[in-house]
Length: 233
Image (cartoon, rainbow, N blue to C red; front, side, top):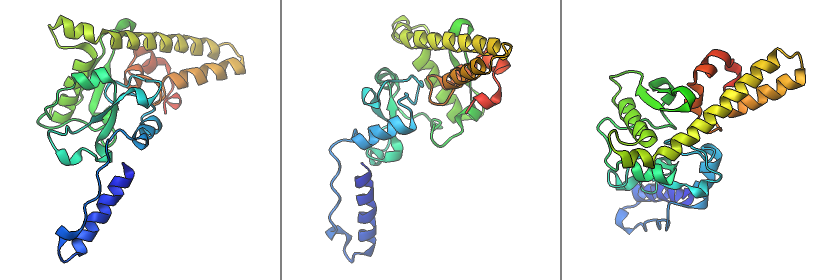
């Protein structure tokens, strides 16, 4: 994939310098955008998490390669490195293929946390997203998409059942974080430096950008109230 992009740059330069650009041979397109370099980048930079739901997968090879801007919207971005994102198969299949008016927030270029608010209900249920600024159309579109992927279509029982496993997985992570917070608070008053260090390390790992469902977990009431900022990377 990276070699193809390099070849495209060389091709563009050669066309600009040639008296007759039609004589410049076009670079051969890769047979697939699902190359090992792309999947390696997903594991390295996305931590093997779905860019839509932040669900963690053991390997990027288990996920789909999603085009952020759909190919039917802009075919020239089919092999564009910056347009390829790791997505859980179910999320990729549920995502509408029509590009919404106003676009979507790009998790690699937009400050999503400053434009999108996440909330989560008691016991880790009912994850919800909303635009911080109601005039921010891209944030509103992104919130609507995330609410669909997390909760299914309102009034559609089949769609809601289809997304249930994701909500159950989120609830399990919610429980782990709450237990880690209780252990952290207990360690703080224990006077045992090793116990304190272990509790801090465990809680920091669960709330890091590499952990599952980072934005939702950091939105928990107990995290907001009890977790110091230096534990959030």
